[in-house]
Amino acid sequence: MLKLPMPSVILKQDYANRLLQGLVDRVINGCTITKNGKSIHYELDAEAKEILIPGWKSTTPDKNKLKNLLINEPIALKKLNDDIETDFNSIVDSNKRPSKKLLLEIFGYSRIFNNSSKADAYWLAKKIGKNTCTYCNRLYAFTVEVNHGTNAKSRIVRPEFDHWYDKSDYPLMSLSLCNLIPSCPICNSSVKSTIKFDILTHTHPYIHIPGHPDLTFRATLKTTGTLQWGVDIDTPFNSIEERTVKDMKLKEIYSMHGDLEIKDLMNFCNSYPPGYLKQLFENVLKDSKGKLNQYDVYRMLFGSELDSSKFLDRPLSKMKYDILHNMGII
Image (cartoon, rainbow, N blue to C red; front, side, top):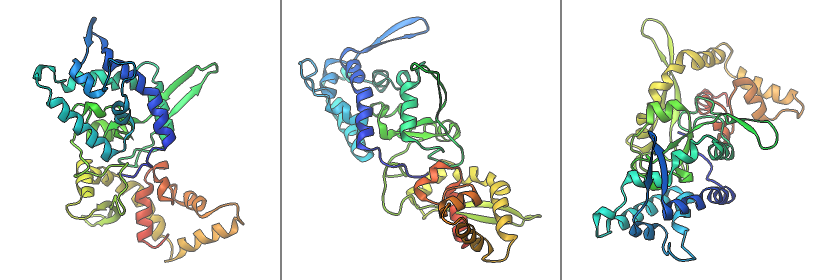
């Protein structure tokens, strides 16, 4: 689990500009969806509309709640979600309280992000601009489009967006910018799926607490019969990092890299005298005569990123950094 830089003010505004008016229209007017050849109209009751858009019948409806649901940062977003749910529960007639299923249809994540044009999903993936899965940092998750001129594009592949707060339980946050985490299919669908995450129990990529996420990769050597390299992940006991690593099955998944990248990395390091690789690093940097910097040389030697802010640009960057740092190579 790595950090994502908080969305910029410009990205938040652009995101709101793309999605807000459509969301306002669906809250006020409802939406009609065709399923199995039948058209179904979904619409909120007036009480729920008033909670989401105060003055929704007037010429100047207050759209701020919906806008904030789209662009608020995680802590403020969760509070807003909880406040709105409390207001919904205070509606006297329980039959007029919106169900989670109804809200999910009104907010319309699937229709917006998985529609035939895929425009909004690809736009957002490119704006976030990270190359690997946020959760595991093992797999590339490129956004690939091919331009054909005159606004024609072939959209080929993009990261999946995991709802950090599960959209079925938290439909109000199903379109929230900071609730959409670029990830690989393994982490999103096979591992995390609908595991219940909360900021009190799990690390959130957009919440940057000093010292967090506090986890360290460590190479291990097993001696059962034959020598075999493995990898472990150290986290503070009973911490949110420990819970996140456990729920995301990161130890189990990373163990498969023991006989691959870890073995190659350790053989590379152990094949030379102590200090040799560090001296090699310095010599390559010096001999480039300014054409390469330390980050370039590191990428050439180890195929990963040295700068922690760029770990998500190349697979396994965090793992390799921790192991090389522990060995004194960097």
